[in-house]
Image (cartoon, rainbow over the protein chains, first blue to last red):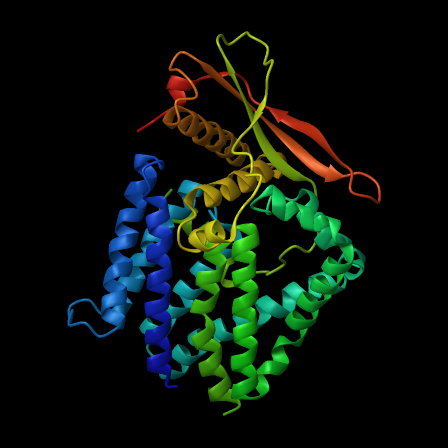
Length: 237
Length: 154
């Protein structure tokens, strides 16, 4: 995968994720002020999608659209006084900033570094999440995952809360998550293992989306997958 | 002031911590009470957007594509945590204002309140007590009663 094709695929996927997020902010229950912030984001994302898939919009190079999206976020962030959707928004911003750097920096080596940084952060997102769990005795004993189901704000239905009553199942599930997250760096050793690792990770995000309603995590995390596929090819070959 | 506030909030995204679920701490719930007068004591508190008893697979899959209300609920959780932990007056005021406005807008849109009513919210933090499955709630914040009409903007 060339740098250019990986960047275009990432830009197209991010644009689709931004369109989904923006439409959620445009629903009639949102305040007018909020909707006015997301109309430009929706339009810019649609244009970025068109430019990324090669539609003839010659005046609108992705670099201009990405810079405009960064400026748009400089207004959106103060409105919510930070991220609206926690980690999903942080990953959205990271992808946007890395892509903007990859499209606008003058030297090819800097452009590679900007895009490679995204791949490295994706890898860290799994390793760090595994590390903070494995050093916590509550995670190692299964208590923490039981608490997530028992009283945290995330289970999207009361029937999902009932999973807290299955401690053995949650102990195994917790260790499966920790093991996968910590072992993720090993998947970059070859292309087949990386593809398998990313497929498992996507299933994990899908499960979180279903059980905890974290749909934006699912869509935005897979947007960063082309960057690690490119980085693996660039570094390991 | 643009663009400095936005830059201050944007730049941490370049070095994320990725510490998801590192510890499971007390979890906020937003309750509301509708009052006829500002000096009336809240007699009945209702949980704001209580979870459905049963969430079916079809609904879960549909919410993969369209989940605005739940994502707003998660924002209310963030606002609640910010309100309780922020040291800055501006962050506290923003969190309080947003919580009240979003609850008021929902009640207004669903016909659960009248324009002359007053809204009061409280934040209840739920945590486990002891080694079993028992949980307790502790009220950590109660807003002043606010005229609903003054909270609802277009």
